[in-house]
Image (cartoon, rainbow, N blue to C red; front, side):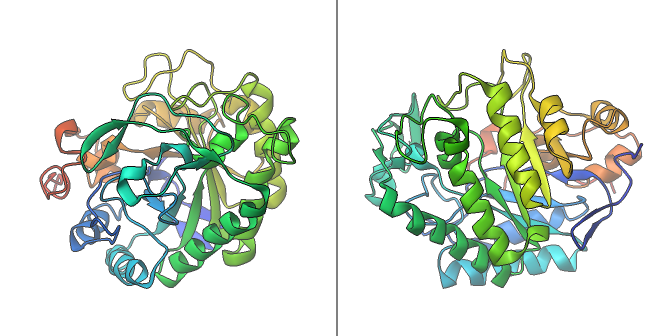
Length: 357
């Protein structure tokens, strides 16, 4: 069985190890969602990852609901992301853009746009806004005639990602955001072709993935799911059937890889009292499967040795240890991350973490 330090190919992309960097929202862009030089430095510092998955990146104003998060819908976004990808490639790295539509998690105070979702529902809790935390508002259901426009927004963002120099794209279909809101029966109450039976609720995931593949190629298209339990108030009554069905669809489309975020009962950033669905998904999805959430060196190695995964994505460990593969390889102590600086806009806790050498 492979180890974390063995290479792996993703389509035509050669990844030198299986210690990948997970998507991490960091909020270091501008209010117009334009990437900054700070972001180029941050990602280049972590170029030793087998593959970098960017922070979730908005595909449109409609889908962008996080202050200072990056976007990929305009020429200015493309030009500044090109600075980021150039820096990563010059440092020897590889990088995919994660494409994000937040759905009902968008707060209208950011851009004056009412949130959209599968159905007229409201997320629990409060949204991060420029004016502090505010209660979420009810989303309006996307009309059938709007679905082609939505798919077109994903296509535009994917085309822009390739123009910006990214090696591929990952569809964010996890964590209670728009695609997840369509997948799960707790948030999808539709009675049309996108609601009801599982095959209908998986339809938007399939159509968006097909459109991305048509735009950038299957070898450059990946997907992220978060199957086990509630995520930002989005849940399903039968996760053990829904998500293997979704994975089987993605397997039939030949995506480059599928990443699963599944926190455990003792998770350090999110917890779930539901068992992981990954073992069932492993049977349905024959391609490259990537696992995420609270893995360390030993548990990551074990997952690969058991055949449960082909690679592991590390989030906060990569945040605080830019040279994580080196530290793992030499069994060095890891630097702890500082939650107070996760979204603080400045360089502190972003590009100031030390390397081992």
